[in-house]
Image (cartoon, rainbow, N blue to C red; front, side, top):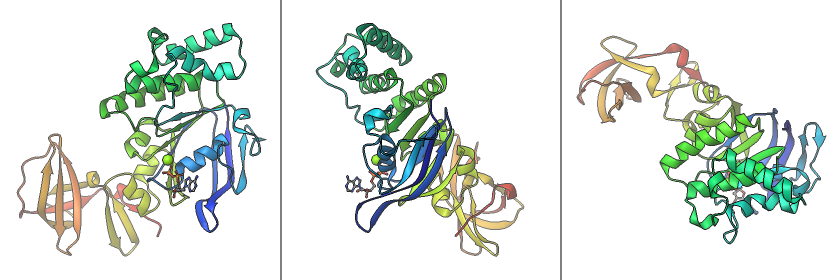
Length: 319
Ligand code: ADP
Ligand code: MG
């Protein structure tokens, strides 16, 4: 597979409306790398620039040190998987997976061998002769994945591939895509707006906002040590506290409820969710604090408690 370097890539579709501010990233060989951010922040644009489908205004892209910025998409040896599968409805599973290989001019035996291997990886060997339209959404996405794998890409690009699937299938496919990437030692760039998808699958995540990379790091780093309030809030619920040191973020599960502690607070309301409760407290200073408590005892609104913070999990944010 490939090491990918993105050097100073910037893009505006219209003058004076920057969609990507200059972006620098290095994605090492074999990494499952996520671009995570809200809709419209420029994720698909960056992915399409890597694929060669969109031309950047400036900057370079290197695959294994080779400058491919001017190469047309078909010479880059990347493969893309989309949200809507983009399969040929009139073709069989086999023919869909064979499509890329045939257009590369592969001979009949190579096509058969590679298609069968790709279908085995996605566990669809028995479906080769079926029309794609007779398959479920999850199976169709596996076909799209097999088609991408069959051409042995240097780089796999996935743009919200699971957004059309229901929650149960999505969980299953998360594990499946990660397993395939690791088994095949693929370098992959995966775009999503779904933090759980990124946290559960990624080796590393780049959080994007308004065309700017906010932070790059492992899921643990991004969630546990967010750099600024955007990253802190985008990755999950958090409490932002103004202190002498500056703006502090502390996650709801890092606050303990007891009879003694730093902060006296009144319980305002709560949501019981079985394995945990989500409580809302109000401090004497009038600050609202969200607290997650696992194996929660019953508690009543109006009662007063003391809250203590796990110091090592307080994060000072950049402003
Ligand atoms: P994301 O994938 O994060 O949702 P996109 O990269 O699709 O974001 O879009 C980023 C911004 O660029 C949006 O404001 C979008 O409207 C704009 N945009 C995307 N593609 C085009 C295009 N072909 N022409 C003009 N504007 C575009
Ligand atoms: Mg997009």
